Figure 1 (tube, one colour):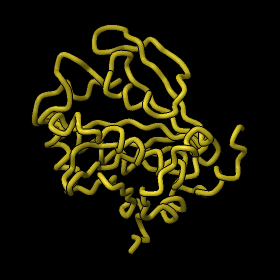
Figure 2 (tube, one colour):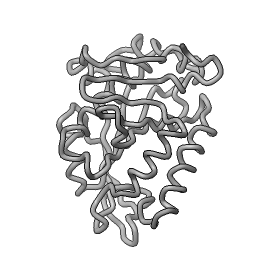
Figure 3 (cartoon, one colour):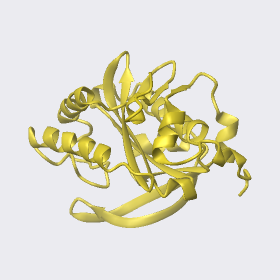
Length: 225
């Protein structure tokens, strides 16, 4: 049953392999502990914000505060929706969908991470496809965007396996130096041919009402617009 006060609590995306689910306090604690067990080689930094460069237990506390802050700051004009990635019923990572002025712009950005013990199993691509299904089929977006450092092979591998177009490069701060960030965009017309029929959405109409947009508006736009 949809929560009439906070419909986001019922948001879920399900594929044959994994699920994306709204992060409860219990899941937030599990994910904070998962992050503290390691996401990447400490010699590298895959994130634009080096949030993993913090010792335990501060990393776990920061993670909880991030989840709580995202929850508290949701508005129709701005939302960061971190979703727990569950495989076999266990939390294995986080996939975040973010938008600014979504009712007008119809654009959503994705970002994600998996615990190191769960990498190399194809979950990254499945997670991205689940997020894209939510963005396009659920939210009716016109485009999805993502970014990665030029040497983030895992993230770029997922992006290049899907019909994204590279849209730019930028020089940004990475820890204590400047490095190259790559940007990619996928339009609805590029996603339509790869749309899957085995990904299922729960709770989207109520979430759309909470966030102040029509999930069908993007479908009425010209595919080449």
